[in-house]
Amino acid sequence: MGTINSTIISGAGAIASIEPLLADKKSILLVSDQNIIKLAPVKALSELLQANNRHVSIVDNVPPEPARDDVNQIMGKLQGAQFDLVVGVGGGSVLDVAKLLSVLCHTSAPTLETLLAGEKPSTRLASLLIPASAGTGSEATPNAILAIPEQQTKVGIISPVLLPDYVALLPELTTSMPAHIASSTGIDALCHLIECFTATIANPVSDNVALQGMFKLFRNIENAVKDPENLSAKLEMLWASYYGGVAINHAGTHLVHAMSYPLGGKYHLPHGVANAILLTPCMRFIRPAVVEKFAEVWDLIPGSDQQLSAEEKSCRLVDWFGELVEKLQLPASLEALGISPDNVPYLVDGALNVQRLIKNVPCPVSAANIQAIYETLFTQGK
Image 1 (cartoon, rainbow, N blue to C red):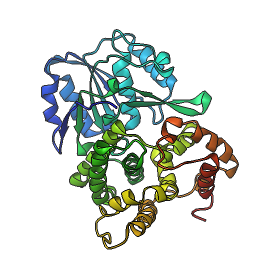
Image 2: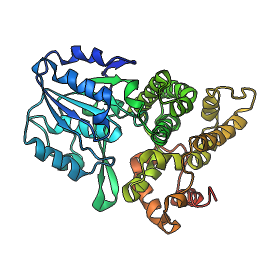
Image 3: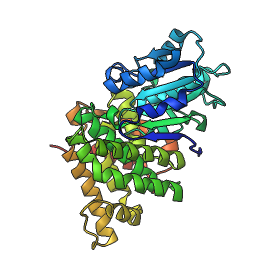
Image 4: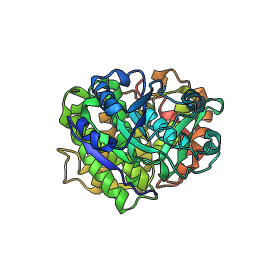
């Protein structure tokens, strides 16, 4: 568990508030992707970074699912350049890469290979992370996830050293997200919050931030998707996502994320889409073990029936998750995405290999249980 000491700037029009953080910085590395770098708020940020004769190097080609070779190629192009600050602006993949570069660009950095092999970083450059989607919460987690294509999986580099010095939650950066991206990233945030709240290692700190995050998410996710210019809803979703990251930092996800890993590693499904497909069946599986906690979450939903029993509330919550995914027009089956049931044995093995998450599941889970959940994903939506 890492302690989060990040300075947080938030609010519409808050880009100018970043200026004081740059007072002693002369050379900055800006990390983004081809879509985000073109946004007007990011151009304004870039101009701010370059003011007062600061030198800014730009990496704007981080792919949606970054792999080890992508990071190695970036490091090769930087050719040992020295920086005072690393700024990451984008979705979770960009922020993960920015976190890694803040370590790898330090003069006493380990190699990426040693990090992937398990060595923990001990230091990094100063970093500022600015999410352009409201889902991963990467700006608040000690995790950086990379794809390992030859193994058809993903590997997490995890260390509190990766936590940034500064975070900026700027809703203007999220207004250009297409509805399907806003939906899937929002469901990713929901998965972080509900999984951390129900994990075996949940604790008062993770519970409190998870509940606060779900309170905000339940009231704003549909408005944030339907009305992309609603800066209030967009900011609340950024906070919900941030709280999801904090919850991960103090607890951890479990079944949904373990089962989504092989879907992303082999089939390159967007992480939020894979989680959306898995959310309802996984929550239905764990429900009997977490009835009281599910009842507490049900009470956060606007207009929910507070007079139901805890058992009834827990069942209704699972149904409501499915209804939410449907309202957001996200897929509910793997068949709809062209994945064959023949792949279930591979998926089961892949999920079971993510033992750091499987151990957090709040009830016993076997290979047969995981297989049964995957198999439901080939019958829904017919």
